[in-house]
Image (cartoon, rainbow, N blue to C red):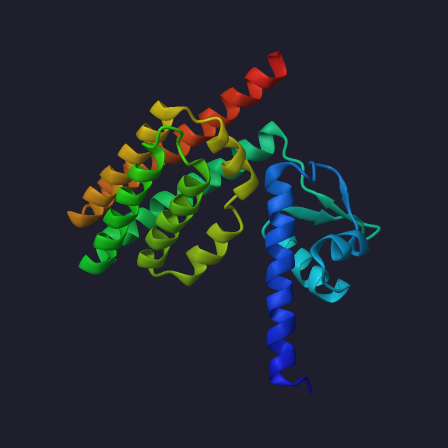
Amino acid sequence: MRLPWLVRAMSKASDRAYEQIRDLILSGGLKPGSQIKEEELAASCGVSRTPVRDAMSRLENELFIYRSESQRSFVNEWSRSDVEEVFTLRTMLESHAAGRAAQRASAEVVARLQANNAAIALAIRRPVPDVDAFLRLNREYHATILEAAASDRLAVMLNRLVLQPIVHRTALRYDRAQLERSLSEHEEIVAAIAKRDPDWASAVMTSHIRRAYHVYADSKDAGAAA
């Protein structure tokens, strides 16, 4: 039986490894299709292989990495059709979540969402927009709506479709006008939730996710042309 302090220490090491490996994937330090080796990551993260193994299991569940038939791990690669399908599924689920949130959200949740939008406005209206802050606050915003939707099944399905590497790379290509457009959509969704209008909330969330997909697709097309 493991001692409580040992369990806590291993959990912290696993969390640290998870964050460092995820950041390497998001930053491009680990490129799509590249093999991930436990021993190399353990040395890089300054932990043993057990926390790295736990972290890689989490990243596999979140679709950051995949395991081959030979049990080797690789950074996930996304084809255009893969991304389009996942965005389509995410649109369906997130619009449903927004509709449920409009029927269930408390005044406290609405206030949290409004405060989140105010923080996003500060981040993106700096002389140089703080995209990292935007990404963190954007995750919190969508997580709050999902929490307000109050559906465990919906949460499980959506959490597998977050596509954080793609969200991150898309946001890095946002200009100031696109960041402002995203914020405007956030504000309209909150207005719909505050008015208890599920159809309105669902419709705006649908256009919000679809616009994000087309920003991603356009940036891929521009990269291919270049």
